[in-house]
Length: 626
Ligand code: ADP
Ligand code: MG
Image 1 (cartoon, rainbow, N blue to C red):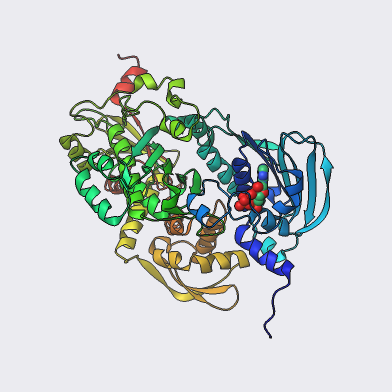
Image 2 (tube, helix red, strand yellow):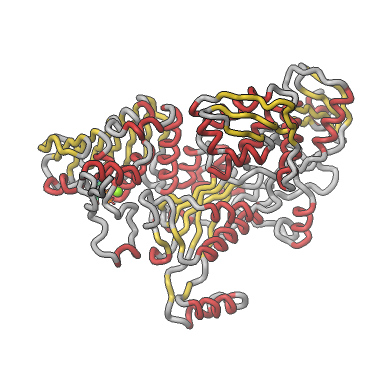
């Protein structure tokens, strides 16, 4: 083939592909535009997971009539004038690509009216071609309707997932922006059903309660951290680090090359609040939602020894830095950023979260106390600063979200000698807070629960959840030593997969190999299974593989590094004893003994409890003995 320049419409579609990957990308761009336009209320409506229709309505500044067609030109933006502006960009958009890209791959209608203009302007585009332009009636603000996304890019359309999956991605985008902007009222309506909304009160706590739930929000601890005034230049920086150890404020006042301080604000979960995946570690940089593995790691490390193995904390954090310190122009979707000094950001996040978590760490029971009680002794805030910094920093409303729920009064300073002291820390770090007492098995009920007696009362153990935990830790240990037990097939089993499952298998090849599957391509979507994880050796191997792929395929698509984890959990789930299985006394004793030996015996890998405890005191109370 000879070299040719692509026709403009082909080039436009290719470029659009970088910005618009799926309906959620459209929602992201449109919501960002609404925020940049100063909206106080943003309403998102979707139909068919956003594939059929996406509508974003805002009450922001609108677009002047004469500029409406221009907004759809590529590289047309009102947010940036020069290259230098890039280093101080405070708006979410700046590339001037979103509207052009979205219009190129959909049927789009925009109606917009700046408050000062008597009438709104309406424009209609299909596949990037302007079909209509005229006046229309509308309240102030902007309404953009995107229909039939990718109608002219069948290759992309094919890759879209089920409506529910695409809707879940959209929900994630909207809820994350709601967290970053508690003072904006957000609403999301999916197939005419309101699925999410925030009240725009400006209280991050209210938004946390809307995004997670009230119970989760109540278990979040305020994180408030600022670096002392920072100075420019490596030389000065090293000097500052030296000085900071003794005299944190000395250099800030004596050196003049200073930049705005680095701060980390938000909420992080109390240690009792943990999840099976990292997807609830949410970061913003200057209120732009970003994804960054190393920041995930910073938070996870801050919880070191506070969380059971394989469990992840929950955190919502905004990093406020000088825009010159971060490059947001790394990728067309702007979801990843580059920090000038990533280590410094890492340390600030880790220190901020660690300080908050340590201050709020549970007071462990010394002697006599049931290890199941995981009390916070009312110590929620742990931090001296009492205003909610999120709002202060963002210029929103002041006052803590906690006060509304009466938590303020419960905040206490850590007791002397309690959390934070050296002895206490050693105690915390050496004794797993989740430890399980030795138990005597009494029997089994409903072919599902083991009844056991411990030093303090009655325990009911879920045999399936308990076995999952045992297998999961075994597999994790084997994986860590790269010595996963696998069972070779006498005859390789030929498995024919659906194209979707085959694609998934190719994508997760490493993760599947890591847990013990040994596979070999056998033409098309057919594979030969040569070995399976040993713990699955009694199952029908082909069935097990297909089931695991099916489980991977549905639900939100985990990030690459989580799929390894998810596959391991799924293997354990399949391999473990089910409810409905009668266990002999020996089998029950063995299971309980193995559970005792795990590092987090109280929860299964999915985070559900493995056991329920009724203390002797509770029993006495229930029977009216006290
Ligand atoms: P960018 O956001 O990078 O500037 P976009 O293609 O997303 O590029 O938008 C182009 C321009 O259209 C913006 O710079 C802004 O001036 C205008 N615009 C887009 N959406 C809105 C909106 N909801 N309200 C007001 N102006 C908007
Ligand atoms: Mg934009």
